[in-house]
Length: 146
Image (cartoon, rainbow, N blue to C red; front, side, top):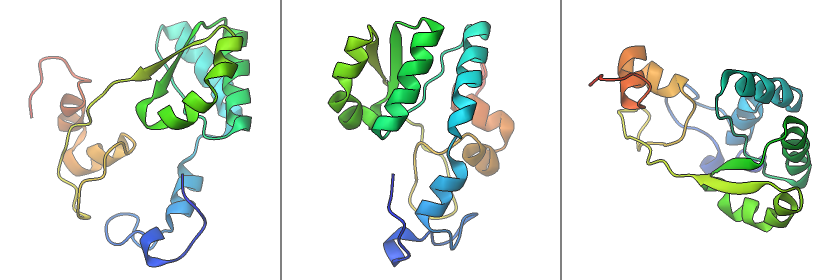
């Protein structure tokens, strides 16, 4: 996602993560590899869709092994990972896995740190809007409005 660099363009200015290098923030926020299998298994039991975006060949190996073990025939990828996923599409096809891309337009909401940053984790809209408004904005609450 980024490189380990402390030049100004790679350091967050203002807001909750002021002073963090982007690299350190991504490392802190990443989902550990050993969590993936239990998460996918739990989602399958609950009838939920779950996706994980691999950005290197080792991560593709992990995702493919979990999909194979669960008997999955489809992989839902984040639209932002299209370039990388397409480069690895042949591996998914060889495994009998159809790749589809999540089509979702991110709603814009107020963020105090400056220009809007999309596709942040759920705590960001919750911290900026509150749980009820964030849930309504993201379509997680039926018949709700801001």
